[in-house]
Amino acid sequence: MARRMSDKKHILARIADALERLAPAPTPATDWLSSPAYVLASGAVRPVARIEAPRLDLLKGIDAQRERIAENVARLAQGHAAHDVLLWGSRGMGKSTVLRAAVLAAQQAHPGRIALIQVGTDALEGLEALFAELGRLDRNFLIFIDDLGFGESDDVGPRHLRSWLEGGVEARPANVRLAVTSNRRAIVARQASEQDDPLNPRDVVDDRLALADRFGLSLGFHNCSQDDYLAIIAGYAQEHGLQWDEADALEWSRRRGARSGRTAWQFVTELAGRAGKTL
Image 1 (cartoon, one colour):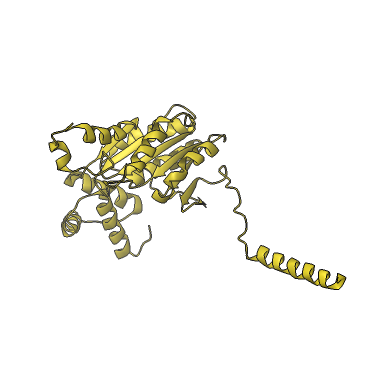
Image 2 (tube, one colour):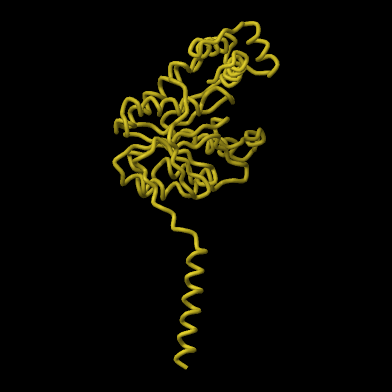
């Protein structure tokens, strides 16, 4: 009897040991003070060793937007009052690039005082808990949601975002601010029929625009002119020691059917490739 009991205990111990080996290791706590940037997606946080962004002065054609964004991020880095930011408008005009560049500049001016956290749209539900965690730290954070949009039938997402921006019952910590990019100022899609509804014709549209109004700093980005497009190329070409031709640059944009900062950078990449250089 004693031997059978001993054998059972041994078997149970082996089973427990096997289950322990199969169980995933506990997720280590995130060190929010050590990295310049982080990515939060699918419930996991990944530190980023270096923010990839050009110098602010290389971002041409968006001078007014660049200055206001850089000033706001610098305030946040210093612990001063700063706005939540909505950058909306044309694709490829540097909305996310200028945010990264502004944070990088602020980190160089105030080492260790600010970090960028890029949050995937699949992790939005965890923002409230993230705010609470970051609010206990002696560091400032810009939470970045790139290319945010909500579908016609999604009423929950906009309401959550509105609640986060307003703070709700529990105030959002002063060391955390949101930066959102979107192709639309209203963030959510609108239909022309909404404005023709005979019942409360402006209610739906006004409610959706009210979401954008919650951001203290809302800046539009629009398709650049030909002069701005060429100025962007000239700045990058000079920085990287590249020779270029204006007619070639214009033909490049015509083939792509667009003039934007992204198109200009793609042309600069082409120039560097032709010259056998890296960027």
